[in-house]
Length: 112
Image 1: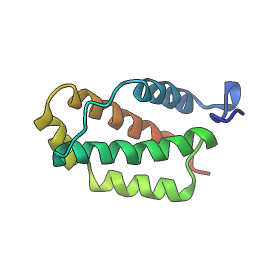
Image 2: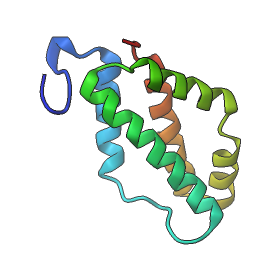
Image 3: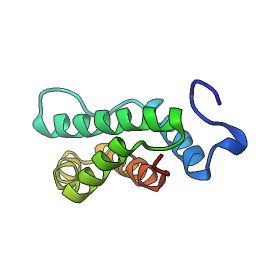
Image 4: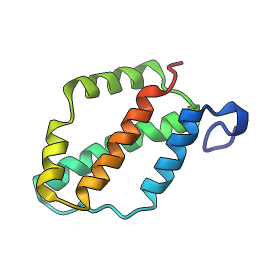
């Protein structure tokens, strides 16, 4: 275990995939910014996902509270984020697609 979470055999395949995708994400400039409410919607979603990812990577799992928050978010859907990304076009669509892939990986993590 390191400050970045479990490594080697201690890390599940989902955690390793999540770490690789998150590392790529955080080293790519964000295409959103400014006062446009659509940019703000995407930025808010990215910030929320980031807060969950950082904890999940350190733990190698989700705790019950994060799992409940993720379930609630997924039940509510991503319609506003999808709409904003569609209206803003590329590269925001690709950015949001990566965030949703990250969310999907989070949903596969064990809850401990």
